Length: 409
Image (spheres, rainbow, N blue to C red):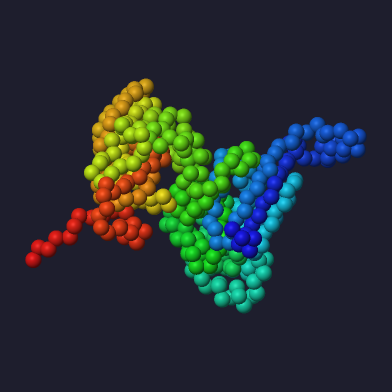
């Protein structure tokens, strides 16, 4: 990474807040303590603690961490809403920020008027905004309300218009904080597709905060993990997510999931996976004629009938590749522990490195799958036993080779 590539540089940034009521009396107490050379009686909270990283132009970077980790504070510093207590921030480009629903909108003005205000703020001329106006309105799906004061918009309409403004007005950096968690799924997917387009075609730099790891995985190749104000991980998105959930990266053939944090979207805890292990393996490598034999143990936190397993295979960029299921294989009552060895045929997969997701689920009376436990599973590598004479190009042809074509006439 050259200095010319860097669009955001954060060096040793810390942010402190003084706890307690912010009023005239506390202000006088702080002033008096400072004059007397004493420390204030109010406790300091370190929202960020010596954070440093660099982001280059065109990168899509995820930012994850638990509540109170410092994510929103960091974004507010990057957006110049607040200043760091110490450290420096270098930003080389125009920026649009969606830190919460309706950020930057004037409630008394219409959607159309707010588009022009936001464009002007990031330095666009009226003519440039005119050229983008129809695209913004069309994408936002708010045409019928575009001349209505935005204070009358629903939260979903706010997000649709705010995202459209950020996507089509020509800022070089987009900052998104949980905004895609509002609104319908169809529009969320539309936004994700647009972000990918902006990154690939316009070289746009995107920083995204979300508690939805699927959202982060879909377009972020790199991810930062914050914990109690400290940057504890900076690297590959899948590794970052595993780090966030507390999954040991060193266990190649065995993992204990009993105390690992689950995905935030998972609301059920009827069943909990305990230990998963590749049977009789020193390495997670499988060859042409080998199936995966997977030891799997679990416990029941509630009574469950007709437990099923979904085994999902993904490539290293989290793209779905294949899925195998085992339906209605077990039932149990609260407090029970059980285990089994599953045999999984991976013969259609071509050589490569793969990630997995394990989901324990049931199917309700309407035929809808209800996920009871879901975890990032063990990775594995598929290898050829011998050279087939032609190298399979997975990047172009995919990771699954279908059965050979036959001539029938």
